Length: 471
Image (cartoon, rainbow, N blue to C red; front, side, top):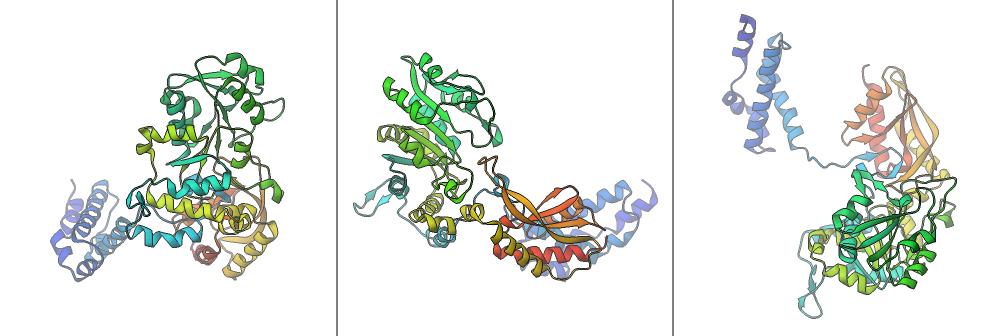
């Protein structure tokens, strides 16, 4: 090791010297001593590595004030929660990576009293004895959908798994080849079926399946006819699938239950608003499905949950399955789901108050006015780093739903000058709070459809700061 490096190593402040400094004592008012020590050690280790690599050529970073400033930055990073709020400016409404659906204010208002105290989660207040956690949502699910019975587990994959494991373990489940879907996280229907212990019997071709294909393979070991809604992709052209009423009729003739996995699942008829049609839960049940499963945090607009609806005898059997305890949901999820479902008693209120539905149903005119308000908040900028203008674009429902539906939207478009689009995207992503945008054709785009009204001020401030950066 050369003499210059040895000299720099000798100048590194000692841990005890840093801990006794008045500024370090100020840290103690906010951070525990163990975290302060860890931050100091991390900063000093980084300095030693820089000296050893030859990237620290002078002693300016070794001054006590400089080291303590680095410690302060490290403490802020260490103390910051890992799970943080972000601003979704991507235009994808149900963004899986960003937490899917936003809960309605009605649900949020109930969180503090329930989370901060005891509740009747599994206690029957009328009888004064142990009760079931599922009663808090079962009745309202039955009310909204006309199902005989209902239960809830922690997500739709779990709902499919427990249904198959309960009703078809060691027996055959008939499903169309065109419906062997894969969704995010490598969740595949064949893999879940294998895990459940059911035997998958594929029928038809990828693009065409006929009723006779199902009927030809029904036998004494057939436990279920399974229909899977391809909510995250579409096959177009020379295609055919068996409508649910026909499949249900076939199941009834042979005494075989019919199960439909709706995936996203929704309770609102999108076609009435001129949007792409999506099968509703009510439609599936009225068309004869004996069991329907779907997610709670996609088009429904609630928390993560897997909802099972259908015949009482089937739901009762699933409820008795020992897997149910492993897959059950907690009190806060039940609270959020119940409050979301209560809004569906008035469909107009649901569309206005459930953020997921509100964003999907927002008109182009409404979004245009919102975009103009955003530009007004930004105000005058220098324009050396980028030019700001409004542009037309398309939003998407997301969450593996309505893959072909594009929602006309307005976007804040930042055309690069002194800064690149990639730099601006990264800078906004590391803002506090992070703003998640997208880059297309070397322009940075922020879709105002998914930016909440309360977030417009933050986005405007970030754009002004970005404008003031030195390129």
